[in-house]
Amino acid sequence: MSERFTPAELMVVAASREIQDGETVFVGMRLPLIAFALAKRLHAPNAIGFFENGIVRDTPASDLLYTMGDPPNIEGALMCGRMTAVMGLMQKGEVDLGFLGGAEVDKYGNINTSYIGDPTHPAVKLPGSGGAADIASLAKRFVVIIEHNDRRLVERVSYITSPGAGDGSSSRASLGLTRGGPSAIITTMGVLRFGSESAEAYLESVHPGVSVDELKQNTGWPLAAASEIATTANPTEEELHIIRDIDPKRFWTS
Amino acid sequence: MTMRAAIAQHVPDGSSVALGLALEALIPFAAGHEIIRQKRRDLKLIGPISDILFDQLIGAGCASTVIAAWVGNVSAGLGYNYRRAAENGIPNEIRIEDHSNFTIALSLLAGGLGAPFIPAHTALGSDILKTNQNLRVAPSPLDGAAQVLLVPAIVPDVTILHVQRAAETGACHCWGNLGVSEEGALAAKRVIVVAEEIVSLDTIKSDPNRVIVLPQRVSAVVHEPGGAHPSPVQGYYGRDSRFYGEYHEHSTTAAQFETWKRRWIDGIGSRNVYLKLLGSQRWRALQVKDRKLAPPVNYSAT
Image (cartoon, rainbow over all chains, first blue to last red; front, side, top):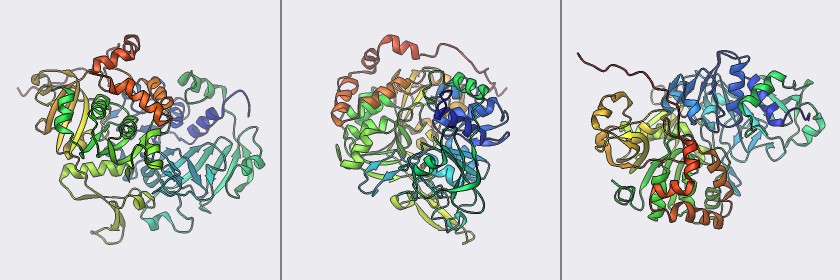
């Protein structure tokens, strides 16, 4: 990994590139807060950000956000309202993209943020869904951002908090989900993509300085790969400048 | 009413209590700390996400049940007390009713509507439906074909809201992101309002669109400036994100949390004492100094 930027900065850049101009994005917590602001300032000036606390923004916040409820996210908002309004619009199909984190993600894009081990006697109790199960169920597509190792990228999650493609054989529609599904998993080592041919994630690109073997060794299942594995494009000077302007003390991007 | 009296009167042992309904802002920490000081037990905590307040109530042994979508520390990570309780029954076993944010929002909405449940398309295929058996999947009664999630109503015994300003009578104004504050206030049997400022009823009635709870539903109004610290209150003070990081470090073990609790909760007689402990310089630095006033609107009938 180049010393010119941190893995977190590269993940923010990769996440921001998932946002297309004019899209409505369910932003979420932590790195996506910066990815949304970055996309807004560069290639997606007309993107709209939904926040589950009820905020809707058409401009990036004026200051670093530690949480979506911070005062800079309210000042200059397009709307400050109820959770049921933004969640309801997502249920209607009006959200293009949502971002999710997780403790575990599997090859079908299912995410666990609830329990490691038996839920009645968990080895680790994780914080829970928050809005993640809703974003995974209701957005037109979702992107996972996660640290890359074989404890986090596992063959099957032990608990599905947020549904991807389930067990890979039955469709989301058979569960009653009317749309959506995983689009990409952005990790500290590369980008995994979901296509239309298979429910399984495949390796699309490795980050600069990461080998395909190294990435596969740190993945908890035999990872399929694109016919040509790309190298994730480096962040541009402009992208790094904006990220460091947003997060000068590297609270999120160290 | 004082915070001590409001909690003593309206939050008895065994109550179901909804709080933190605006998510990361306007969290009624002062009310939560008074609940801990009064050693309430067997509470059922209800909320969408809880940014460290539920963790504190759980660590202090106040909670028997958590009905929530997320419990932790939003800017710093996991909630250690929540983990200790769920994993090892320390300080006591807790029952967890898993939700997503949308299902808890719809539960409170149904509670306020007097509806038994609300159908939804969310969380289908999620194991939340296995660990919370109150959430059911059924064919839609209208067309019989589509599977829908039935989200049952939740009616909290009490909802506690932190707001910017209130009249003594219970009428109050709140602005910023509301989360599920309004739904929670409509659903609950009674409401405690904690306000940064007490204003006249005329001030509240001058802008009825900013009223977030029917005043008749409010059982107690508590004047508690700084009562939401370390969470932010729009127009009053910002988020003390450093405090969340410090709490994370100082709650790693049960013994550390006990020390933290003694310092910040047990020995604190009033919110003024808490803010003095925080330090006037730190508290001043969090205050909102700029003014961005919305132009007034005209409500005149004539």
